[in-house]
Amino acid sequence: MDHVFFLSNAAWKAAREQNCYDYVVVGTGFCALAFAKHVLASNPHSRILMIERGPFFLPEHFQNLPLPFKDTLGGLSETFPWTMSASTALGKNGPVRWQHGMVPFFGGRSTLWSAWCPRPNGDEFNGWPQATIDAARKYFDTAEKLLRVQRADQIDQGRSTEELNVIGKSRPVYGPLQKRIQSLLEDKGKSVEGIYRTEAAPLASASEDFNGVDFQKYSTPGDILTLADQQAKLHADGKGARLDIVTECVVERIQQQEINGSRQATALETSRGVLPLGEAKLVLAMGTLPPTTLLRNSFPDAQALGERFSAHFISSIVARVPKSSLDPEDKFGDLELSACYVAGVAEKSYEQQFHIQLSSLWDVDPEKNAGTALRYMPDVVATASPEQLKSSKGYVVFVCAVLGELDYKNSESWFLRNDQDQNITTNSLLQVKENTRDYQTWQAMDNATFGILEDVLSPMGASQIEYWHGSPDLGEWSSERPSEDHRRVDALVHESSTLYLGEEASAPVDLNYRFRGSNNVYVTGGCLWPQGGSWNPTLTMVALAQDLATKLESAKK
Image 1 (spheres, helix red, strand yellow):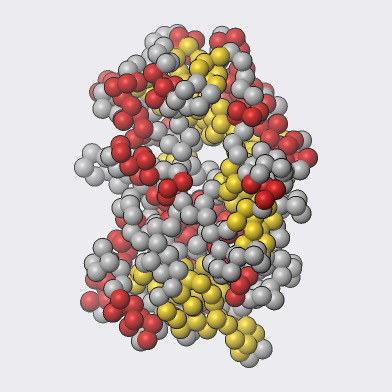
Image 2 (cartoon, rainbow, N blue to C red):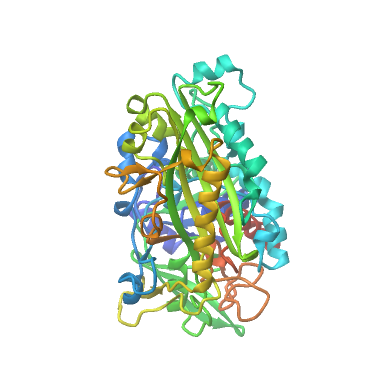
């Protein structure tokens, strides 16, 4: 891999000494790919270097690979380049004790994500500058195309009952179950307090339809390598520039100087030597927390970095309903899935957003179909366990991953410098302290989830609903609702807002995505979010990365 696709030691040495890049991009995840692909579509002669801190690990999303690769999900594939405050880690500030980490490999989190890609509506962009909202909307179509987003109700749309029966012998069908759940939500979902919209889940899962594959979770490694191969061929024909990629290279600090009255990034100190930047624009596409640490160490006079922090707290609720009450006419096939997105707010405020990622599974033979179901599960990060399925013959199982917005105005939740850590790549301290608004949002989203399950998705009444209690593999079903301690997860996801953008001079990043402490450093990703919202951030991240590419290419021209 190193010699075919990535810079060898000799090529990296030459890149540092001889090459002159237009853009140096740190990261190889969604934003890095979106930016590079958009730039090269506009000008194939643009010279781009991508820097990845980790090695090559997975060629694509782990869910597309054989069943044993499911064990790559979780802590073993994450790194945590920060420290949690003692009060948070010990549980003194509330249920949240930690923040999910980074995936330190080529492709980043794209190889291990849930692939849900909703478009936020106008109200959900609460607190965002209008220019940024307009930019996101302008690029939503191209972002969906890059991520290959399809709605769950489109996966098997237009197929006859006979076709669905044949397909159902080899993989789950998004058919009668999807239609039934979607119809119930459309009819009664908004009657549940706080819920204002429901829809078929938009999933980054449409394949390019080769070799019979029709459902393929999206990840960036294949597309980045395809782009590099394309550029190599153009370069050989004199029609473009190579896309250079270096792996196992940690960016430790940005060297900067004052030039003509403004700060300019001049070089990168890395674990593999110093890289001069020359005239290159530096694009940080490395997640939310690592670029905050990097900029804080490199530009010590910069203000407001990490003072604002938001993320998504989670409730996990697994329930089941007798299949007969949802399917009295016996239309469901042997193996069916559905995925729906349900959005709501607490206290009638779009500063307190939440949403439910609702996955449903009906399986005639869960022991036989375990591997197949996992391969096609809409949200494999939050899915039913084999024990939950095996003990649910005759039932439709619902898995609810419920995400709520951490209050970005809370001054006691922050990501600041950790003076006790001498390692400049990790010397940041993360504190999360839930406040009254957080608990209001959390309670509202839990109540709304129970309302959706009991009042909407159980046609024969709440008495037909049962909930899973205990660990996924050792629990049991009960008519009692799971307690707060059982349903509330102690980890955050989708961290955001540490380098929020805004028109005001106090915002770390301006509306052109430029870090205000330098004239040639640009930022992408969830760290830009002025307010976290609750919607899954990837689609909007990609749209804004494409907007950044357009802005920089236009300025260059």
